[in-house]
Amino acid sequence: MTAGRAPERSRRRLVGVLGANAAAWSATRLLAVAVPWFVLSTTGSATATGLIVFAQMAPYVIVQMLAGPLIDRIGARRVSIVCDLIAVVAMAAAPTLYVTVGLPLWTLMLVMAVVGAADGPSNIAKGVFVPEATRAAGVPIERGTGLVGAIERTATTIGPALAGLVVAGFGSPAAFWVTAALFAAGAAIVAATQPSGRVAAVAEPEPYRARFRAGTAFLRNEPLLRSIVAMVAVTNLLDQAVMAILLPVWARRHDYGPAVIGLLISAFGAASIIASLIAARVGERLNRRRAYVIGFVIGGLPRFAALALGLPVWAVVAVFAAGGLGSGFVNPIIGAVTYQRIPAAILGRVRSLTQALSYSGIPFGGLAGGAAIAVAGMPGAIWLIGAAYLVAILLPARRADWAEPAAGVPGVVPAPRSAESADATATVGA
Image 1 (cartoon, rainbow, N blue to C red):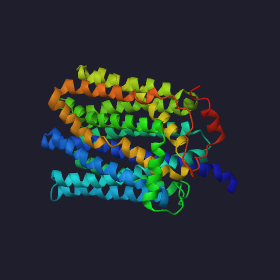
Image 2 (tube, helix red, strand yellow):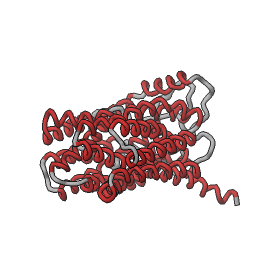
Image 3 (cartoon, helix red, strand yellow):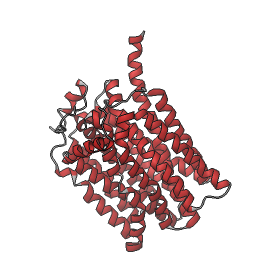
Image 4 (cartoon, rainbow, N blue to C red):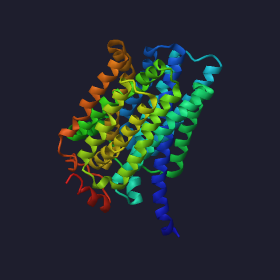
């Protein structure tokens, strides 16, 4: 009986990881639409909208970067649950204040700073579950990252669409309650499905500073990961400028509402779900660098061109959907490269560094979007950001070591892989 339940328990861990990420990502995607629209609607200021995004994302990046050694030390499960519960309290406070004493801009900035500081470590902790949960389920790492990518894209589809419906029907404060419920669901799923012990290998007792240095030393010796991180940092900044500033301003100038913004983002996300599921199925057989370049080129510049050229809504939706098909392949490929190059014993701290650096531009995305509009006007800002996006995605493509194993660091054992994963990965890039 016990042996018969083992496969079910193994699959349960992976399903739990996917479910917890679905809840958390849906919450953040909902916020990405609801909060900027709330600020823009109440203040009419793109600058104020940029400030609120900065207030959320700056703590997200800083605390996320510092949380890695703690995750490796006390375990991803505990960090994920506690941080999600902190986000629940903060999000519940926002609508409560709004209907009682009011919610001025500085108070909302404080609330979003708490949410960002909690969401950053929680996001990293959920990522640490992925390699072990995937191996326990007996599937290649590309399949695991592909499924995670599909879940993320599903959240990208559902979150903005839900935000548009809730904001249009009940107002932004109602969206805050929905977000709190999603964070609570994420905490409950992790508590129910993930083992209470540490998922990553147990680190030897050592000072926090030494553990942090081990992560930075590994990243310094990994030029491919460094180039990927730099690329993602730039594209995240530009995507945030589009999400927080350009899309809302574009919608208001064309007399569209938040539902149209949600439709565009959801069309992109829905198409990328299909691509992520395909990547989960065949990703281990793809040439990683080629799939990355093709996917990002299709998923990047055409979206900006569609907005700048003033195409009708149906055409913009079609272009965003086509972009989603290309972009859906990118994250599973990058995720597989990352997980297979980082040793299990330092996964938390290295992932926290790479993720935080990747997100380091996001706090400035709203500010950059507002500045670009002020300098170049609306169409000019879109073209400027689109050109920068194209340059950024070509940086990692110059490297030829996408399928090579990491050199590692002294005294750290690389993460084990299943035989299926190892055999499949050996053919990638051939």
